[in-house]
Every structure is written in structure tokens, then in C-alpha cells.
Length: 346
Image (cartoon, rainbow, N blue to C red; front, top):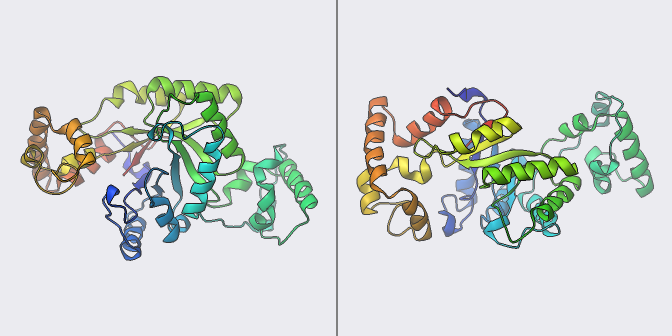
């Protein structure tokens, strides 16, 4: 059984924009501000976005989301074949940082002294060109910056120093989907370059098969790249295949899973009649276009009609909505838990 108190809650940020392709649920600054307040009140830990989510990144930055929440983003990968290469991935990461305007909070020098520990590390990890801004010490001579950074690397534990810079970069950078048109080694070289440049804190994959997860992990370990630490997975009470095919591997490798679509793309908020007839609003309506084709193709089937009837009965018995029951199931009764390998995503 899950321990929900330790789960990390991440809000899927695709609808944070007026883009109708993503529902335009939060199309202006007023509605987005109300959303941020709800997320803060509900204890949501971060916002997830992507280059492929229209203008979501820009609107998160424009409305101050990057100052209020850690932000995860994604290079397109297979969603735009050929777009995520060793050369382009660092640029994607840089642009995501700029668009989301993730907060840069300087750490006073006296705080650094509290992390004294002999340790030799690569000075480039301190983002030399912005050292004066990061440390709040005013303008420094270019040569002195490099000397000063090298001294910091020797005297202080870099992990502790960097942790004090709250939201200095993207929290997680994902490859959004596998792209067989680009060599995986080339993509991971780009990820490493972006990491070395300081654009993100942790590396993750989205929509990759277990075999590809293992391959990415092995390449990163062999080459000394940032190790794969996160994998997103479609998971709900009616989509549990990953419990068998993916979760055991993630446990073995110590990789956290961010499960998405806990309400099955809205399915668990519907009645079987609504899905069958494609009436009403949302992704299962006749007017949903590509979204209806995608989600209808997955779930508009007789077996799911029966499941929805049973789900409705269970929700009524629990005195809650189908959506609430779906979230409660993931939080309290599913295979995900609060250990390092498993987290929850809204």
C-alpha cells in the first residue's frame, strides 16, 4: 500500500496557456494565478511542462510560475523526429530555462562557509560566467572568477553548495519520447552537455520502453554522464501493465517513476454511456478531434464500459467522485509509494 504523505505531487502544465490544442483551461493571468494558489494550498511540489506543449513554458515564465515552483521540462525527442540531437538538446534546455524564468536565488557567502569540506571537482559546474550573479558579490574580473571558482571547488562540497541555490535551473530535463532517427549516444551526449552547462538538476525519460531505459542507464554509467534518475509512466486503476513490465526494473536501478494520467485521461470521471455515445465535454467527446482519436482508441471499448460501471458504484459507495477515487487509489492503494524510486504526477 502506498504511503501518500511521501509522494511528490507534480502538476502537468500543458494547459497553462491559451492554446486550444491543450484545452485552454487556464488561458489568462487571472486563471493561472488562481491555479497557482490552489497548487500551493494543495501541497503540489512542481510543475511539469515541455517544448511540445505549445506556449506553456512562456506562460509559466510570464506568470511567475518559475519563481513559485520547481519546473520540469522536456526536449521533444520522438515527438518531433530528428529534433533532439547532441547539438540541439543543450539549446532546448537553455531555451526552456529562459522561457520558464526559473528563479535564481543567490546564496550569501557566509552560507557557503557552512559547507566546508575538502573536495576536488570540475570548476565548470559553477557556471563561471554567472558566478558573480550567483554569489551576489558584484562584478568580478573574468580571470579572478576562474581562480575563485577553482578554490570553491577544492574547499567546498559542490553538491551542498549547489543545493543552496534554490531552483537555479530546471529540476528535471526529460527526453519526451524515444527517437530512433537519432543515435541514442548522440542524444545522451547532448544531455550531458546541457547538464555540464548547468541547465538542469536531474535527468529523466518519458515514454521509453524498459529495454531502452536499461540501455540509457548503461550508456550514462559507462560514459560518466548524469545517471538516469526519473522515468514517467502511464498508470491508473485501469492501466496497470507497468506494474509488471516497468516498475521492477526501475526499483532495481533506483530510478524514480512519475506516474501520469491517474484518471486515465479523464476516463474515470465519465460514465460508460458518455464514453459510448461520445457525448459531453472533454477528450471523449465528438468534438475533441485528435485527443478523442487517441483516448477513444485506448479506452472506448466494451471492457472499459464494464469497468466504468463498477468504478461508478465504488465511487458512490465511498461518497466521492470518480476523479477523487482515482487519485485516492494511486495515492493509497496502488504500487507507487514514497520511496525514492516511485512518485506521483498529477
